[in-house]
Length: 122
Image 1: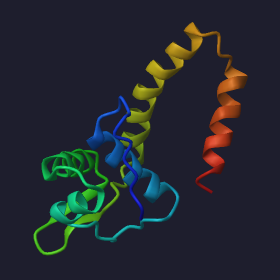
Image 2: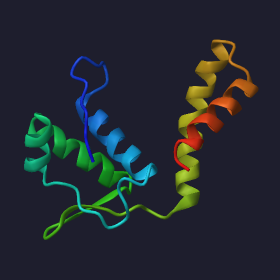
Image 3: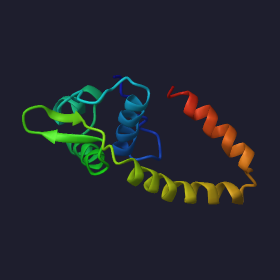
Image 4: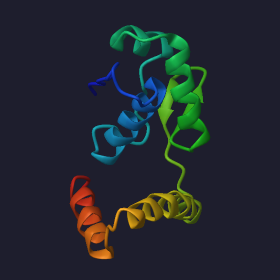
């Protein structure tokens, strides 16, 4: 999986890394049980600090996306708790949709956008 970091982005580097790993899983480039590069290896591959990679891996672990294994390192281990995942998504969507309503974005606009994005993962 090729990780591309935008060093000019306002988004934190660890979040860019986290998001790209999640996108890799969603698009089937990464699968349950796959090992990610070690913290040192990932940092060297993309030219960032090891602490930044460590932070991204820690966030992914907290979110139930990876497990940290002493022998295998960071391993894709998706938390199968669908109800909790839906509650988390609902919480995040509340804020995104509220912002959209402030910009006069309609329900139909949102549905079309969700359909477009969801198709990228199928």
